[in-house]
Amino acid sequence: MVSANTDGAVYLTVLSMVATLVIMMAGFALLEAGSVRSKNASSIVLKNLFNATLGTVAFFLLGAGISLGESWNGIIGTSNFLFLDISFDQDTENSSTSLAVSTFTVLLFSLTASTILSGAIAERAAIMGYIVWLFFSNLLFYPLISHWAYAGWLGDFGFVDVAGSGTVHVYGGVSCLVGIYLIGPRIGRQEDHSSAFRKDLGNLIGHSVVLASLGAILLFFGFFGFNGSSSLLLALTLENDNAAYYYYATCSLNTLLGAAGGSLCTMALTFATEKRWSVIEANMGLLSGCISVCAGVGFMPSYAALLGGILAGFSYHGMKLALIKLKLDDSVNAAPVHLGSGAVGLLICALFYNDPVGDNNGVLQGGNGSLLYKQLVGFVVIAVFSAFTTFLVLYPFKYYGLIRASENLESNGFDKNYMKEPAYPEIYAKGDFILFREYLHTNLQFKKYKEDSKKFNAWNSKANINSASYLDIQVCGSSTGGGKNYQSQNSRTSSMKAGDFVVEGLSCSNFTAAVGSQNGESTIPSNHNSHHNSYESQVSQISDFEQPDNIVVECADPEMMQLKRLQKVDTGMDPQKN
Image (cartoon, rainbow, N blue to C red; front, side, top):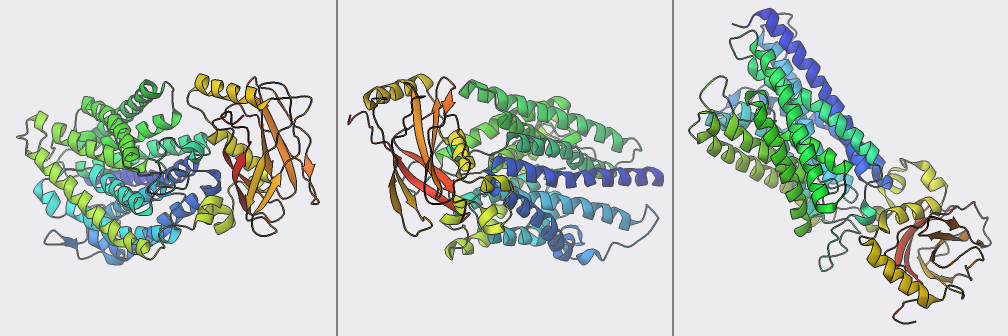
């Protein structure tokens, strides 16, 4: 039998590892914040804080009792509400100690499951809809799933999910699918149902690869506690003093192998299809691989973990492409990571699981194939339940037009106009240049360099570089009210030469011409100041251009501090007309 001292040491280890799951909250916040535009970074952090705090209170009220209380017919727990069944006792053999450890563990798993949706619907979802959903997720929805799988009818049926491939990640991934379907794509990905769905992100690309990567690494670290704590709790049921630590060591190795397989697979797929290396895709593969071993963790051979990670990489890549085909806009690709990899985890478990307490082995480990059927049933139950409950909460918001932020708020960003706390205040303090530069660096990306260069050269030769040129700019919602039309003066300067490309931006205090060339040189032509006080302007090198005769940019009024949208910049130099 396991001694009391060993038991207590294992509990202490479990608590230490579960504490690392708090770091995963920081990981989710950084990953999601880096994957969205800078104007929405603060709102992402706010949603993650709501999840950690309000979610904990909801779990305290009902969730703990529903998930860990004494089972009623394998359907719902009926005790431990408000943590009342947890009492102070120094005797480690007392069941209250085990209940306290389990409560803390399941709470962190519940918070993880509910935070997944926040990234998928980022940048356009009204915050209140997500807050209501996360409250009910931690109050009722996840606790029910947890009870069924670990103490109720689904577990008795033979469903195996040691660390949450299904209960956490399939549950969270399906909620993402329902959420992005109800809310719809972001402005810039698809304008309406009849217009084309943009396959590439364009100017919707995340503002910081470094922040997103740091978040992914913190999540990677947290998975050792996520998977390890579950392995230890299961191993406590074995009559072997060394079993707990043996399975934890195996779990750690398997988590590392799964992560490696997933990351290498997604990097290889990206290079094969796009001819480039991608840090973001490597991050997503890393997390996909970790999720793929959650179901079986330390109770399957290590080669199975590596195989699961590789399959998770393929699953992530394929599901990401499928979402584009279906015109579903997942801001951080949360559904491909969690749903796809969670499903792979359940499959790998069905094939390679070594049951330490019974004969519920995987197909390739001497099982009779029944576990494969049981895993399929579990997947369907969790997916259907998640879809139904998410729809139940979010659809009323959609019906009454409350599920999505206003177009103005979505265009200008949640941080400044809604929260009054921009993540990067200097962007707004410096006026339109920073935003204009951000647009140029994210949207003016052309896919076929040689083809676009020929088009530009043809346009440029017909435009006659030595003659005067004008840009007609329409500003919507100017400080004087209504829209105004402006026409710039001649912006050609003696320092320009053939091959240069001119784009002019307008703010309420000046005209600023930004000049760049493909050979890397740039210059600033003279500014055309209005009666307002001018402010220092800078120039952004424009090395790439896609449609020089139809450009959409954003600017900020340095006095009113309100974002304006320049709807159209028309050079009037269409090569077909000149």
